[in-house]
Length: 289
Image (cartoon, rainbow, N blue to C red; front, side, top):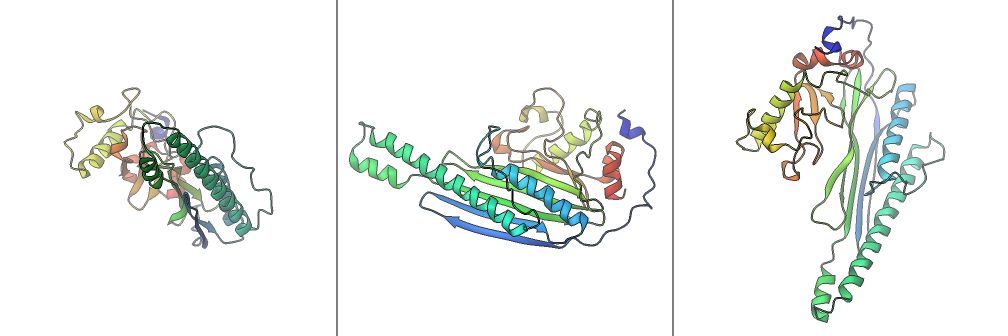
């Protein structure tokens, strides 16, 4: 059994309820002949220590996502914001402006290269070339950062982006749902205690069977693995940290993480009663279990 299941009970009476988190939404939208971008970022608007800490952590999420749009390389596409960290609007606008430049420049370059290739094709006539060029796909990017839960001891912000770069289909990216300890403003880095992956397999399998059942499939526990893309027999804990909601702990797998693209983003909720033995002490504290 994993260490968390053997941990002693924690006294929760020392945890104080914190006030609701006041936020502000920053929204921008712009388009060119070949690109469009929608941007929405909800950030804490307070000036206390917790609000500032959460806001600065979310700036980090924004920086990481927007400086690597459509890129799987470590190299950044533009420099990090180096202005006044207390100028929230200035910081947000900096990242939006740079993200729009990345998308618009990338789309223009992509369309130019496609047009050159088509114009050099001697197998089609000018009318066909003109028709193909008129249907040239552009790029789309949507950045979304929003608070989805404001509980007594924690707040959850969801980072989820959509990008389409002229291919067969777009893709969902982002940092997932990020849980903050409202007392300190710090990120809850880990919900499931180390060493518990094998112990929680029945819970993960049950959740995935329920997810696929909603899609009206004939998947059950005995044939579940046939529909998954696993490197080993164990179903991994999602790369995105699970996050708490009113009904329990939510698990979300990204596209292609454990299943084909057609399966979407498998997600399910495990009740706090079922998952409690496998939670880290920090997770137990902030959900007040």
